[in-house]
Length: 458
Ligand SMILES: Cc1cc2nc3c(=O)[nH]c(=O)nc-3n(C[C@H](O)[C@H](O)[C@H](O)COP(=O)(O)O)c2cc1C
Ligand code: SF4
Image (spheres, rainbow, N blue to C red):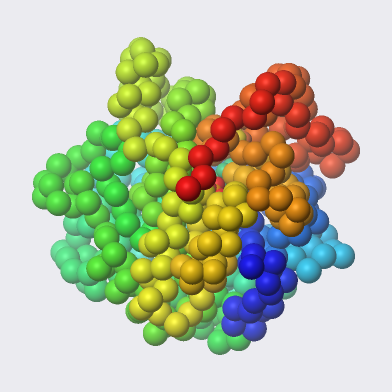
């Protein structure tokens, strides 16, 4: 089933598997795509995926989140991106969709601390996400500028001859901060009610559609359910408790989905949770070592970042795993039921994200009509030729263990697989990480020294 072709809007896909967004530090400091970026992306294009959804590409000069991630805030990025996409997809049927985003107060890191990295819908404190001590409420002028920055970046995606554009309203990033009632306490037109919280996204969708025209493929990534209580986190304000622990749930997100369809969006890309990474959006083991690397690498940025690092360095690992690890567990097809709930209320295609690796699980989600396509990240990082392997077997020979180490430190460490159990030695694992983004290096064939970690299937 996953090998069947499909179509979204005017774009034809050769099968139902997309490479999901994977951001990493493989561009030039200013965000211009580099040979390392091209090399990384090209491995997937050559591996048989129907399309690639890019890393979250920043629309804003200040919130680059982090340095060396790709950017599209200026015209000078268009020609390098156009050339890169041409090289990435050359000789393949792979489509290239650029995901645009703005991290707002969840900006992971910065060269120096700056006020622009704390802007959000409202003021709040969040120990885990973003590096600033407290977020700051955006003015209406800042909101208008942010809407315009999405439209301008979308126009650049079109000019770069990509196959489509996706706006992320998920991952706890700026648009999600407007949608989530915990982070949006505004009482003006951009808050106060479900329509108020949706308004920022609505204005962006209208502006992007106008910028790219009716024919260009345009999707939105949406979190079906915020699960604000996961991971365990220290946040303020605490009240009302319903917003603190909950956030958007299916009644709200099915409403957003219908509105997005009415606004002319071509597809919806569904995950869940609030913040990146989080136990629902990245279903798998709790990656304590990766988080420790991340918090220590960013500790210079604020008093909060120093306190966060102190917590991770002082509290014993066993306690950290119990407290911060609450909710982290692998769940196959983690968001497929949410995708199904959304698919029931719209007639545009729906892509499900998270926990797909087993061919039986992928085919079951597609065959039962839960989704039209699946988007995969970690299993493709573990096995770039996953689609080819799944043509011959239900599972890859050396599967991703869903240890989640790769996403927990991607803001500070190179992209690659960090589960040493999948390799014959530490040296082989490190060679693999370096090879991912090095055009002149052979990728070592990963072979575990011991039998591969067990992955649960239903
Ligand atoms: C290294 C890495 C980087 C990621 N970067 C992004 C990103 O830039 N934007 C985004 O929306 N999701 C990002 N994700 C999340 C993935 O797109 C995906 O939603 C998540 O890993 C769950 O899918 P999986 O179970 O197939 O890995 C990243 C994931 C990984 C592993
Ligand atoms: S580090 Fe490797 S095994 Fe662990 S989740 Fe990432 S790709 Fe999979």
